[in-house]
Length: 106
Image: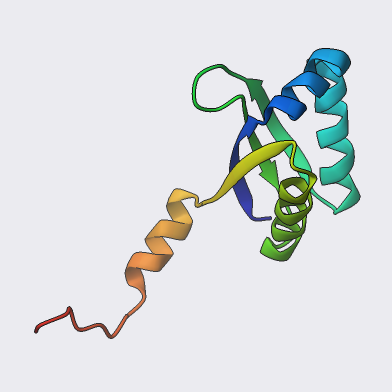
């Protein structure tokens, strides 16, 4: 199952919701959304600084991740970025593939 790192920052309105609902309430909401699309939450951490919350999630496919991303962004409560994560075996497989490429100017 594809794995993703999600980093998010609450907007002022989203931070108000977090203050009202608490971290446990938000974790439950994340679990529900991810499980509803056939995925699994591996880790959830709240932070301070540039990111307010960091998650590692598994989804059955990238389209499921995109659906969640679009829905969350449309809410206006968070700004997010999702990074696909690869295992060492997946990177090893990528290094064995031939890719025809010519660098600019060569």
